[in-house]
Length: 332
Image (cartoon, rainbow, N blue to C red; front, side, top):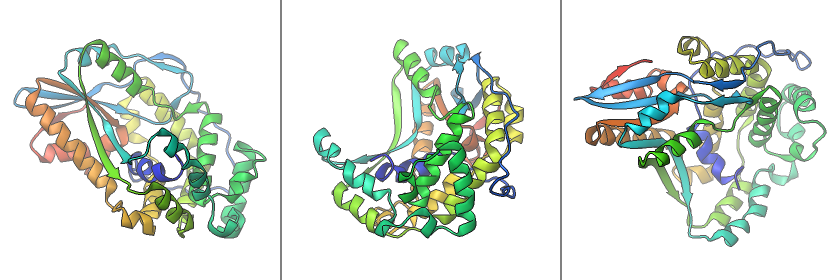
């Protein structure tokens, strides 16, 4: 289920700031990584400060992936949450259905089928030969002899490879910030305000089947994900390290990966996505978060939120939109 329906939402929310895409190396030219990943207890970055009329919104910038063996501990964040009246959850999307747990479980076989190429085709049959050669070299290194993934659509095979490469590079995609933020909010009795866009799916089984049978041009998504694995893993480690030690200046200098935006565009172009009106989902999610943030600033003396650093540093991103609306924004 996670790799079919929910992928439409998850890809819309992950950081997607524009980046320079380096020329990918040849299939066998995969660089070893040099950057050491920090371990132990780390404070993370300082907070962005958004103010109007004496009311303040404190924003923690987050980064994914992060060093796997790092423990994040920020007394500044905990103290800020304790002094706040509300916490705004990160932007999110949920698919609402009328199904119970058992009937949802029954959808899993359909969801698993939906991630496979239509007509039983393999990756070798649906992507160009040069891309498949690069995929084969990376798959041998990070996944191994898993034949099942060869039958997946390029967009899902690429994500599987990306997750395997992250894991082997001393990094983790598991969120470390939000669980601790929610724990601190609960401990200090601070309510958490959701910033969620809910999309109603009346017939999830039919929707999954429609997706499984539909064509998708996701070769560019596949290519950009391969390029990011080939050329950007060391930069990911550097970003994770910079976040862990609170080095915002370095975070500003490092490029942000952009394959998710391309992958979202491929998903949004499918017939089922157009029928569900998902083409502007990312914009709707951002607008929903901005509305929650402005309401919270107006009613609270202090509010806490967390957002991806890529969204905070992006030209025309959420901080720029708050500036344009008349709020004062101070960097950490």
